[in-house]
Amino acid sequence: GAVVSQHPSRVICKSGTSVKIECRSLDFQATTMFWYRQFPKKSLMLMATSNEGSKATYEQGVEKDKFLINHASLTLSTLTVTSAHPEDSSFYICSARPRESGTTQYFGPGTRLLVL
Amino acid sequence: AQKITQTQPGMFVQEKEAVTLDCTYDTSDQSYGLFWYKQPSSGEMIFLIYQGSYDEQNATEGRYSLNFQKARKSANLVISASQLGDSAMYFCAMREGKNQGGKLIFGQGTELSVKP
Image (cartoon, one colour):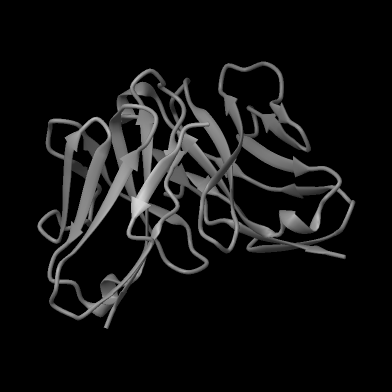
């Protein structure tokens, strides 16, 4: 099956620093990638839809200046949490939809962010 | 309004027995898709089964089957012959019509515990 990777798998940073999370589709091209946030024992909340070569579409309530998304190529999307604070600590998961598929999304393994 | 509802925060099942996880949805679209994902403690999202709104037969994938009742707007997951490895969080998700860009809306999740 299709593989999506995320890097790093976990990161601890100091409050006020910025953290970049990468999402890569390893064996397919993804025109669309999605970024989710998940709190412990809670549902996945869609943050934004990332389209290759264009600006990301953010969900209501998500600060686009706080969570910068760049989809620079058909295999890579990045999420940068700028000036991170403890309340940004969470599990961030990306998914990628292959160019050929209108239905299937493949999820990355997630990134655990802890802001001290 | 909640579009995907999972009313069972937690469920217990005896090993080798069958279990049904409930999911109801709300949409005005005629074309939509329903998904079930398993999330073990490691955090990865594992795709289990998919049902399209126009599919006349209930989807099945090995020990997983989806009890799709369109008029009731329910898409319950049935796991037969439960195994200890089935213990995990289970999420129901919906993809609405094509103009939504393929994004998924997730339910609150059900934590399944399989007892030996």
